[in-house]
Length: 139
Figure 1 (spheres, rainbow, N blue to C red):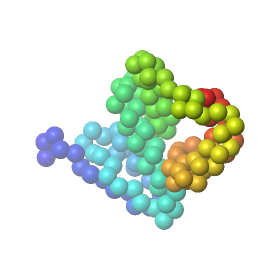
Figure 2: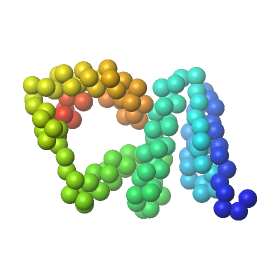
Figure 3: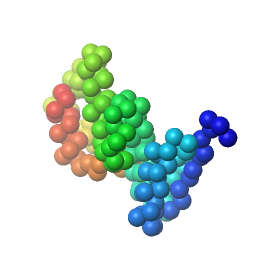
Figure 4: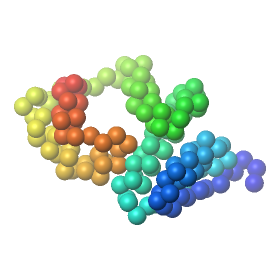
């Protein structure tokens, strides 16, 4: 089994004290890869999957994050992507697409209804006010 990784699936997070550790152990083991996550609580499973993906992206972008915890890696991902976009001079703002202050209520509603599952699977829970603040910050 040289140079091959073992696929691991985690079923159920009822016993979270071992399940999250198991997911982390798979993530940091070069001979394993997380191929599936399932739980009766679909939202919790989606949150963990999103954290896992973000942590893997952070590791790929900056090997220095390997020593960070699973959660810290996931949180570091957005900072690393932002740095990359600045490095390649790819700064795009919502205003570049015509978004104006008067449109923020409408686009927030669209985000909360049209992208409900994406927003709910994000590791950090956001409120409508958080979304409006982000739009305003990047107009």
